[in-house]
Image (cartoon, rainbow, N blue to C red):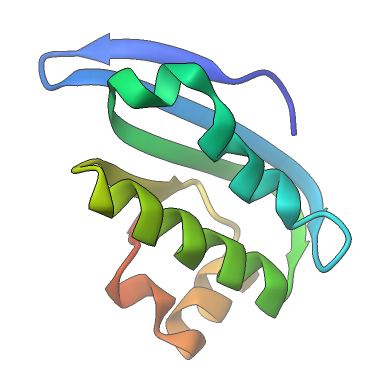
Length: 104
């Protein structure tokens, strides 16, 4: 994970978390770790920027779904942006794209 970016929009604070490399059983916990960011309490939207992700397995999907449940319970939106084709395909095959907003 790299630096977390924050920006304000008319709808509130957007927290963007860029991820890179492989997201698997070893690294997936970095996704759920963002839930401990104190700025997230003020956010209206959490976005994961996946443009630099080279691989994701089911543990990455599970982590995204865990985060989605948590932020949804707090009234926040979750979006995945710039996901590579293979990641978008994995999210579609697993049905995760039905509960997580996947944006090109």
